Amino acid sequence: SIFILLVRTNKIQLATKILVFAISIVPFFRLFGAAYPERFAPLFGIESPLLCFDSLAFGCACAILYAHKRETIERHFKTRSVLVVAVALMLILFPHIVTRLEQIQIQNFTLNFVMIEFGNSLQALGFSILLLHSVVAPGWSFYRILNWAWVRQIGILSYSLYIWQQLFWRSPENWQLNHVWWMGLWIIPLFVVAAISYYGLERPFLKLRNRYRELKLTG
Image 1 (cartoon, rainbow, N blue to C red):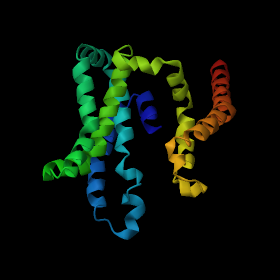
Image 2: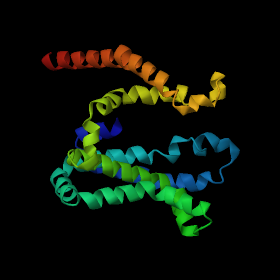
Image 3: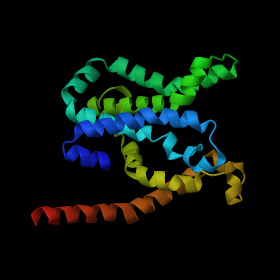
């Protein structure tokens, strides 16, 4: 919300500084998180938002960059599509590659340090680049899959799926079920509840919001 407000009020430089600060500070939180006192667990524990809010910052940065440097972004992304996608995929896969090297007993201190401090950030940057490229070149290669009807439907339900997935994607023991639950059975009730949530709550409220906006504009 704060970034939308800053962009709408034309305070692009301030928004950019906040984003740079957010992206830069997260690795220090991860570094401190390796030896935090127990009383700071809510701040630096593995599920703390302080360790991953740079993911949101990367997405906001791409949105601002595209809004104000659209021609430049489109020119480079369209003429160098293969390179852009390759770099993005390398950033996303980097932590998995390092983990695989550790499993086969090939360890490198520098790589391990980079993965711990910047692994999540690199993945967030990679996904942000892919998302931006899909906006610039929607007809390129596998982005066409995103326009399939059933994929679009998943996109429509995505927020409801995000809200409800924690309830169903849990250990089978929590539901007094055996491990067959992990063979995809949890997906069925998740989609049912997500559909009820979207069509019963989210969409009616979105319509109400749009109606309020229309009244505000005409008034």
